[in-house]
Length: 171
Image (cartoon, rainbow, N blue to C red; front, top):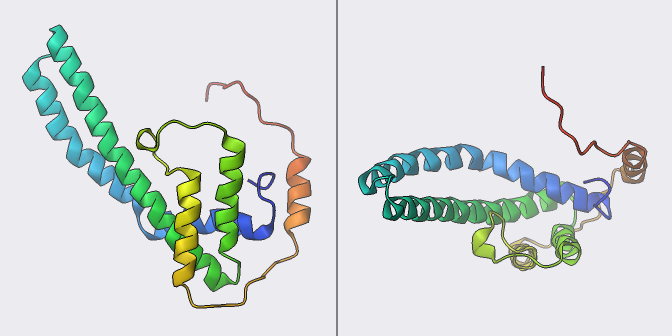
């Protein structure tokens, strides 16, 4: 993240977004929704039977429907976290527009993506527009807070070795 962010406000934007997930209890809500959907999905899968080709296709369809519901909840949670994150940034004195600029950067570097309905996160371009709309609802403020430590932190992160691509078993 330190390497990807262009400035301290972009880093603060990502952190504010993640803090918003905690404040809004998105993790807890997602687990509750998953548990609520598991029982009907299991009953429906059992009712159609798993042995036949029709039964197996029905189970695949039920699984896709189940996952699409959870993905839509995730996209909604991401939009909520973006909006609250922009507000948190503004309250802290960071320019919330930098969160939108970070999404713009993600979109520029991300290349082609699949359709949004197959993703747990909204399209970066849509997120950028949503953050900009949220900013228009905020009271005017003077932004520009900086700790002055961002460049040093970025330099320290650049000096770290690249993460290993292989996984090792935990013992």
